[in-house]
Amino acid sequence: MLSKLIATVKKETRLLLRDKVGLSILFIMPMVLIFVMTLIQDAAFRTINEKGIPIVFVNNDRDSLGIMIEQGLRNNDLCSFNDSINGKPATIESAHKAVAEGKFLVGIVIPKGATNAIRKNVTQLVEETMGSASTATNYALTDSVEITIMIDPVAKKSFLVSVTSSLHEFISEVKTKIMFQAFSDQIADLIPDKTSAPKAAYQKSQIIKYKEEYASTSQMKTIPNAVQHNVPAWAIFAMFFIAIPLSGSIMKEKTEGSVFRLHTMPTPYLLLVNGKIVVYAIVCQIQFLLMLTVGLVFLPMIGLPKLELGDSYAGISLLTSATAFAATGYGVMVGTLAKTEHQGAIMGALSIILLSALGGIWVPSYVMPEVMREISAFSPLNWSLNGFYKLFLRGGGLVDILPESLKLFAFFIATMAIASIANRLKRAT
Image (cartoon, rainbow, N blue to C red; front, top):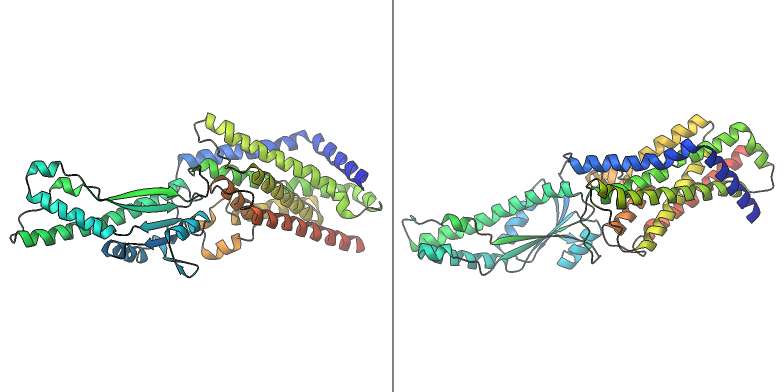
């Protein structure tokens, strides 16, 4: 058995090396694709539909500020409002975990006593207003309110700038309303003719501050950018595109008649294609290493951020292997099911493009309609992409990407089983 496997591996390696142009395209095409797509996305931001951004809200204030912000978010088309997670009221810890796991894009936390802190500051502002101009100029805030905005690292930076800017503007409007309503009420009590008004300097006081943080389990906070998204995404696309030359190799054996000679050998069909799987899986892993090299070395040379690999090289190795086997298994299935070489090429190309579109390679899955997001969960490219997001952006490790890796290996086994059954049926007819 081992000698037959080695023989098939040698045969496939020689066949692959003969087509030097095709082999070069397999490696050069995805590298160029990463350069182009990363430069485009880093240089320009294409506006996307922001309606329905999933937001989790934690209101620890339970007073005017928290209630007004909550009401505004509920009635705002910008977001899909949630204040509970799995049927339980959201807390800071559960919200951070949910955002880190990708269940929400943004988490907003209103701290306890926020409204009281604002009222204290307003009282001091009124007192300073009624005092001398010099004391008003030297006014310094004693209490401030820090609203925490948690951000999913998977969300693109340019997209989040738009979202968080809208949130800042909305919350500032609420803050201003509370501040100057309190000013108006207190000044009305002190000065019936209401001739005094808050000084301009006070209107610029930053009573509410904002702290943005990326929800991640890693101690090293990776800032999302076009490189972190595009390198794994297009590397996965290139690995699955191996299905086209792999299916072409199988179809070529059929047209040349060598497959009939192979069938006369007392060897199972799966053993015959194992040589192809080994060779092309190695090609996929070499592709991925080249993609990492682009992100680590070449993209920084043209002024783009350097790719951050996270903390788990074991996780990267396992997920890359799982993706490589899933891609080669899919290629074997397409080559077995197709009846002609052209049919195999068209079926492979179109299906990979479709699976990549559904998997979030072309368009992030979180901006898709709900139905499409549910369908996206069945794409093997989506499993792999989510796994690399966990490793590169969310600080995950080997244990975190086990579900995605197991799905990819299961997909490989399923495609090989389909290929074996299809081959058996073809031989019987």
